Length: 113
Length: 114
Image 1 (cartoon, rainbow over the protein chains, first blue to last red):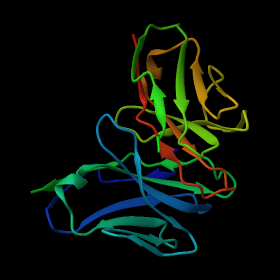
Image 2: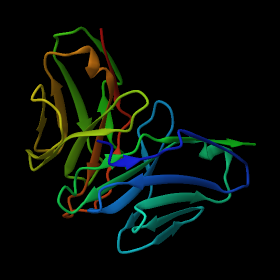
Image 3: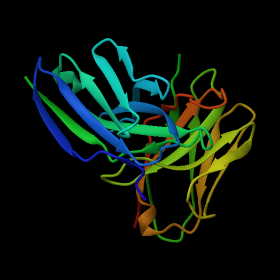
Image 4: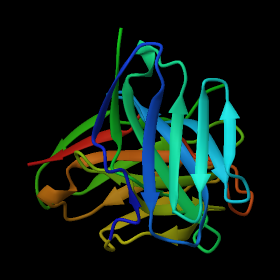
C-alpha cells in the first residue's frame, strides 16, 4: 500500500525555467513532509520540509507548497539549473509513527542547458 | 563536520548467508534509522534505534535485526539472505525531538545477493 505517490517518473525542463515536482498522499494523519534529492551512487540529501500547520515554505530557489484538502504537495525550483538534475523523493510522517518516513517512488528531473 | 558514513559501500553475498552493515551517525545525532531501497522504488523503513533500543519497526521480517552502540553507531544484520534482499541499504541519522525530525542519509551500502 503506497501511501505516498509520485506519479511522474521523469520530468525535463529547460535551464532557467521553473521545475514543478508533484507528490500525493493518502494518509490524512501525515503532518510533516520533506523533499530529498538523490544523485546516483549517493544517499538522499535533505532539501526542504514543511509542517502541516503551514501551506508554503521557501528556501532560496526551492519552495514547497502543501494543499492538505487535496492531500497534495509540490516542490518548485526556480530558476532550474543543470546541477538540479537528480531524482527527487517526497517523504511524509505522522504524529503516531513520527520517526518512520514514508517515501514516494521518486521523480527523475533533467534540466537541459 | 562528518556526515553519516556507512560501510561497506558494496557487498556480494549468496543466498542463505548472513550480512552485517555498519553506520556512523552525523556528529551530534543520537538516533539511527535504516531503510531498504529496491531498484526503481523509494526507501522503505526497516527500523529505528535510539538509546541502544529499537524504537520503531517497519514491515520487515525478523531476519532483519539491528543494534546500536553507546557511541550511537549502528549495525544492520540480515540472516538467511534471499535474492529479494538485493537492494541499496540506507542509514539515516537524526536528533530525537519527539517527531517532525529531519533525517540525514548516508551514501548507502549496495547489497547483491546471488
